[in-house]
Image (tube, rainbow, N blue to C red; front, side, top):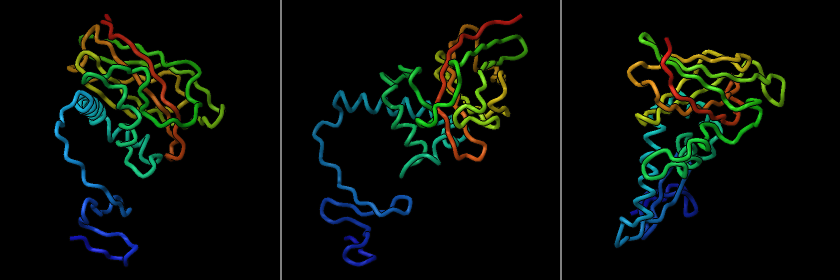
Length: 219
């Protein structure tokens, strides 16, 4: 049985025939009940579930540190996580990240980002591992300001693990060094690197820049 709370034209909760009424983020919504599917395991359905599982595994560990700050404010009627998933799920195939070069950790925002693509160099020693990201500052170009904050995502192709960072740097810093967890990286691991800037007050987001590097052994 459904309950109508605001008159015959208002929102309702419960079920009427094949329609369910509910509320999502304070917005009244109606959903149709899913049809009965004779074979819920078609090839397309299996692949879509595989994409979703891989995309979720990629994003879960960087959800709070990167995805939410870059996406929540700019997502329309959905969470930042859902916006990220919708934008990137096609880049995961066969349960893995298949197209890292087109992954976008930020929305398609302002193009004032970097003059050149990211240049990254990762090194590991007996004592520590780190990655250095080299950028070209473009403060004053378009909407770029010197105080814009970088957000970085690293993905280790060998371990399939993802790491998120919000370095204490600004757009004017030409080098950003990040210390890596030593037990998660090894020599010759291939690392995908994504970076996007966000205005310090969260009002302007910039497009994603991408690079890749291989961890080298340093003396």
